[in-house]
Amino acid sequence: MNEMTTIDRTQRAYSPAAQAFLARKPALFINNEWVSSSHDKVIEVEDPTSGKIVGHVVDASDRDVDRAVAAARAAFDDGRWSGLPPMVRDRTMNRLADLLEANADLFAELEAIDNGKAKGMAGAVDVPGAISQLRFMAGWASKVAGETTAPYTMPAGAVFSYTLKEPVGVCAQIVPWNFPLLMAALKIAPALAAGCTIVLKPAEQTSITALKLADLVAEAGFPAGVLNVITGNGHTAGDRMVKHPDVDKIAFTGSTEIGKLINRNATETLKHVTLELGGKSPVVVMPDVDVAATAAGVSGAIWFNAGQVCVAGSRLYAHRSVFDQVLEGMAQNAPFWAPRASLDPEAHMGAIISKEQHDKVMGYIEAGKRDGASVALGGDAPSNGGGYFVNPTILVDVNPQMSVVREEIFGPVVVAQRFDDLDEVAREANNTCYGLGAGVWTKDATTMLKLAGKIKAGTVWGNCHAVIDAALPFGGYKESGIGHEQGRLGIEAYLETKTVIIQM
Ligand code: ADP
Image (cartoon, rainbow, N blue to C red; front, side, top):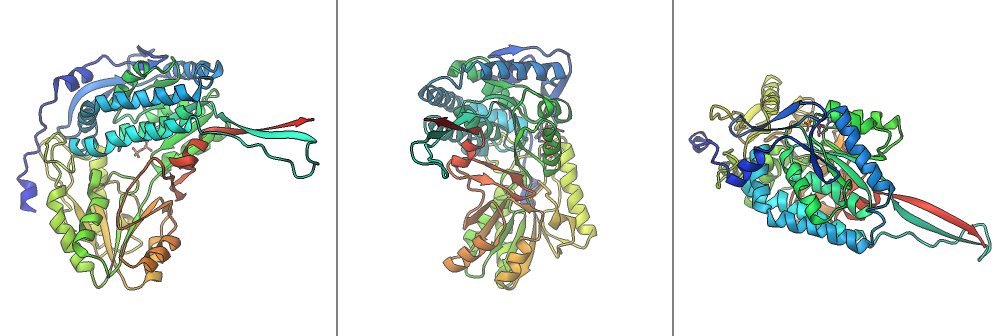
């Protein structure tokens, strides 16, 4: 691990375009215009690599939220978006995707500066992911359709009955800080395709790429008020959005704790709610695997994005016969994931989002040690005097009662355990309140299918991890969420079904 301590983690220079964007006056994007807040409260933009404040965004007031919701409400109610030919909605969304593509390098850089993630990863994963969400969902604008259905109790021809699919209405979309642009695109794409209008709020830690996205909205051709972007704190602006009587639907990605709170708050006005929440995803390694390839895969499962991934493979269960080799293989992969400055071209892992999150991750490692866990790899926090880094970490000698095994750490920390047979590992994999993702590594098709069936999770990956695709539904079992995003289910989450029955 010596190599990890000698890395120069000084942040690299920002491009002139990034500097110019960060220097902009804090503003909100409402009705296709940049407008000032009703008050002068701002949120600092911090570069987690350096710990330096590099800009400011608006901390939206209640009046700001009301203004954005009013814009979305008016844009929905007069049908300026839902009334357009689906072909036009499709084309407008694809134009936004084109503009994202044309600005891909700047988006990747801004994401790296604001979130701390490696720019190379942002360019390879976040930005293309956002583009594909928009392009895939754009096609649904013209494929959404109801059905003509004959009634059960009436003779043929007595009535003409059919269903219509209609947009839900004004959507408040609240996204987290781990994949800011990707999460924003994942939220807006199905809503726009369905004909909804939107108030989008990025996380207070990472507002920059959502604001840059807003910059492209008018140019792409969206009518005013269709997609509004506001920045602000969760407990103020977010809360106002959730409780607002003119909002029809809440789509939230974030922690299970806040998801539960939002669900309770949205009940008052009976809003539609979809929630994508936390996880503690198990990764099962069977004895028959190619150890080197599997070790690389399970390393990426936990260390990609510094483990700040809702589906991070944070509980490793390796069969007793390969446990030691898998951990050795992960140790060999660790230098690849050594944390670096987010703009360092060699970076694969960057900084942790904030001091708060950094301290939380280190607190978990300390709690694990106090509970009797041993550090097999990492466990320490390299410093460059300002940024928030944690080395790739493996904890062993753990048991199911420990907080490091039960709770979502949201950092580059995996707890590794041995198992002997399939039923035992399936039981342990399911010994969690979460059910978001799971990984199974084996060459044996029967074992793969058995485990895919037994594990209670919204997605099970076989010999891969965290593969996300716009066409494939994504959602959580148990306390990992309500509803689905992506695929046909993703667009249906933004549609109402109306039944029409006409006496003939
Ligand atoms: P994390 O734990 O990953 O920081 P949170 O669940 O706290 O994530 O936050 C995710 C998103 O939810 C952010 O955009 C945040 O501003 C927002 N948020 C936090 N608290 C609330 C709340 N009470 N009501 C609405 N949104 C909230």
